[in-house]
Length: 147
Ligand code: CA2
Image (cartoon, rainbow, N blue to C red; front, side):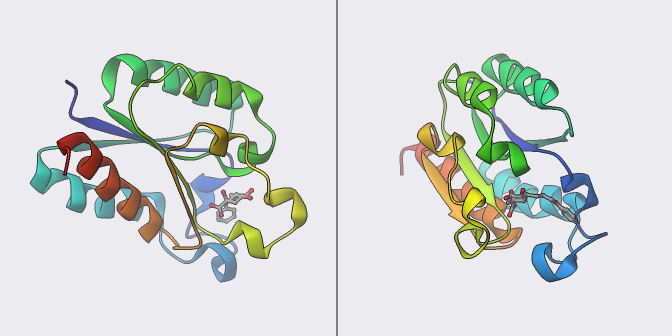
């Protein structure tokens, strides 16, 4: 079995740590990679982080995960609320899927309260800042190790 956890990020998350720190904090995607690796590496897993502003590229990464990854942690950004294509792709993946949102989407505009991805996700973390990614990684490893 693959020991690689895919950490997928949707549109505008390349700006993490560079814009709107009052909503998304000052950490960057490099920090996300670091904190997830800190959880994964001692357990013998590795992190492959990917970000795209393009819906189809995220679908392609989910397809790649079918061959190369044991689990997916995904923050689909705004595609969370719109993308049947990402939901359909996730439904073809057999391992654990965790959905992560840096901000508490339920405290924000009503259009952020619905997630297509939640129809597939095994768990959802919202409002934990980037720590949510590390918590999701920890949960994935617990599930895969059967503890
Ligand atoms: O809270 C989250 O993680 C979101 O997935 C972020 C998305 C938003 O559309 C979702 O409703 C909730 C937006 C990502 C924008 O990322 C930025 C990061 C830093 C600066 C500007 C945008």
